[in-house]
Image (cartoon, rainbow, N blue to C red):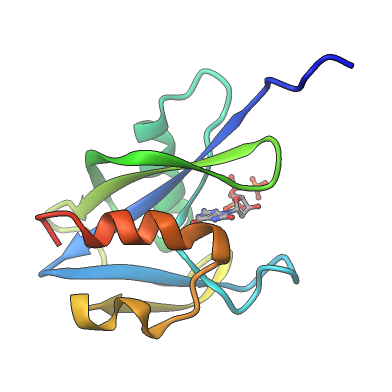
Amino acid sequence: MTPRTERIVVVGAALLDDGRLLAARRSAPAELAGRWELPGGKVEAAERPEDALVRELREELGIDAEPVERVPGEWPLRTPYVLQVWTARLRPGSPAPEPLQDHDELRWLTPAEVWDVPWLDQDVAAVREVEALASF
Ligand SMILES: Nc1nc2c([nH]c(=O)n2[C@H]2C[C@H](O)[C@@H](COP(=O)(O)OP(=O)(O)OP(=O)(O)O)O2)c(=O)[nH]1
């Protein structure tokens, strides 16, 4: 058998504002519902990950966001997906985030509160990496 090499990047945003990290609770699909994640989604063909991030955050949260820097690392999700994370911030004048699509609750977490929500298992290592950033 030929090993499967195709991989599809899911971009997640570590949206930081006033020293807090935005966490989003998934409302679907059933196996992920109720767990918390970094908002984002799949990068489309020929799309740059940073552009996908901006698009997904507009669709899901209604915000105007700006990617800042790639968080080092890459984390496997279910095949063929891998998670990459960028820090991001709200552009001046952006609306506040609202759970418009895929989520039913949002929380801004201070560094002391980061582990107060049940993150998706596959996000824990990524969130640890975000926690280590000087900007948070
Ligand atoms: N956005 C996001 N998705 C994650 C994370 N962790 C994780 O396992 N996933 C999974 C959930 C989904 O199966 C997949 C991303 O799909 P999605 O539903 O958020 O993305 P999308 O809007 O592009 O999807 P689609 O409805 O167009 O298919 O990755 C995470 O931290 N953020």
